[in-house]
Length: 151
Image 1: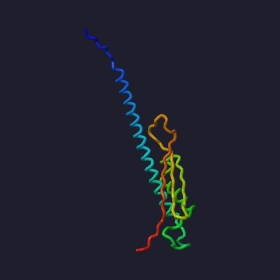
Image 2: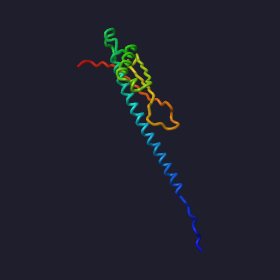
Image 3: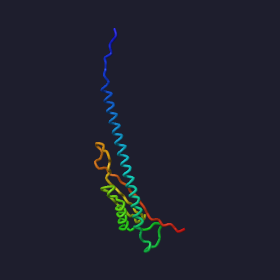
Image 4: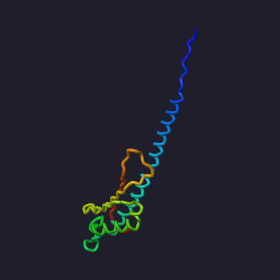
């Protein structure tokens, strides 16, 4: 006598597997979209920081007439550097492009350089449950005016 094999229904398990894979795929798409948006926003801040540091170092240079050219790099006046950086960021529309931007300007008297640090809230198109409610992105750049002998 042959035994009958009990019939099994695997339809529910396959459906559950498909739903699970779809959920994983959706999460992967969200991560890729958010990572791309974060990268592009950081690149924008990098460009602003580079331009602001160069502009600040150029317009904040001092001491040429009072002290002569005794070093490779020009001395930076902190007030002039800060004003130049703020002017550059205003002209570039940094506040409009990155609402809530935070600006920090540092003048290094020893290295005779200018460092600009920018930080802004990250505007992500999609959010994953459990992710930070207000992620931040930042960038910094350092510049100096170097003197080269003529020729």
